[in-house]
Length: 171
Ligand SMILES: [Zn+2]
Image (cartoon, rainbow, N blue to C red; front, side):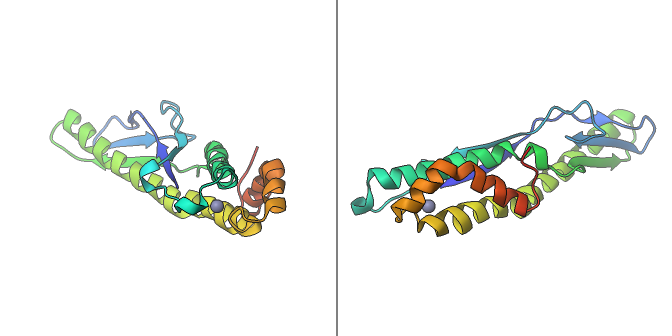
């Protein structure tokens, strides 16, 4: 239903002036020049579907809360990024300029690899755990009205609780 994405625009920073050139790229405590990563949730209408006979207001509310929960979890990503979320690159080349460029390429690849690992191994499993293991299981996909109403009222506390159980900081 929702695709998670982690978008980061970061500026490579040169950390050594002699060859081999080393570039730190990404967002991390040692890289003050990198702007923060932005985490957001996107709703993909093309991958969303519903059985025609099941289309009703209650189901829509159930699905809306999935999105709200996903968006909320995304706001907690910045708090929970690993400290080493930087890309490192070292390169040797005939000229300083070329070495810098090559090192930046390596650093960017390294950064994207770490970012993907974070999304695949940390963020998505936690999102899935909250959405399916908690919200869907406890409301039977929204078919238990009392449970759905309870989630509608208290979802943030439930989500915080589960995030903390999974080792995430929520504030
Ligand atoms: Zn659901």
